Length: 229
Image (cartoon, rainbow, N blue to C red; front, top):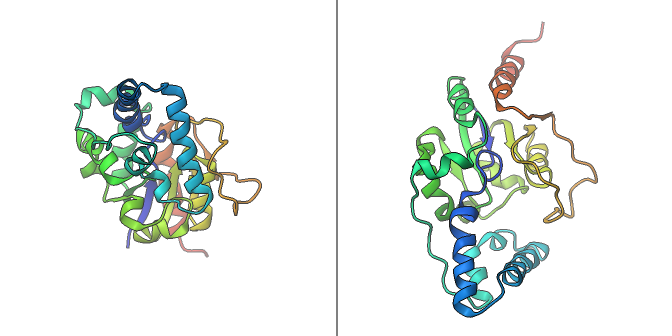
């Protein structure tokens, strides 16, 4: 049985296309339509999502369509499928090369994202990633979000999980017995810290160049398959 190499999506492989190309532009239009201040409206939406997270409604905290209606806005439409050209500037350096190289290895590839499937699928199709990844794991399908270990049930046994967030991705890897690789568009983490997480979360590898990752995974595969003498 092949082991799984799993990736977060937003700010790990690509800079949040749903937010940048769809959600935030739509929110600006809504603010103008309803005569609201955009910054205050966005802060209200973030507080609403945060309150759901804090009371344990982890999946619902990523249900942006419900959240925007709870604060009095219109129904959030699903994003249209953009052109690949519109997405290329958002890709992190060497991501497509890295994915091609890892697909040559005897592993299965999956995306494990906290974004709902309908909000991610158009971008995956545009990039051809719906064929690159063997599985796409989202909270609306599983009923769980990272860092809950049950998020990864369908992509087990797991070898490596790659993500930008210590509090979601590295912690999830730790909890599911995977090698934790922190990579991507890293930013300070001040929100959505799991109250059960340890005080200090450290990845096994921290990458600033995705050209290193295929070699790391290849070496890990040899380590797990070479018999001990």
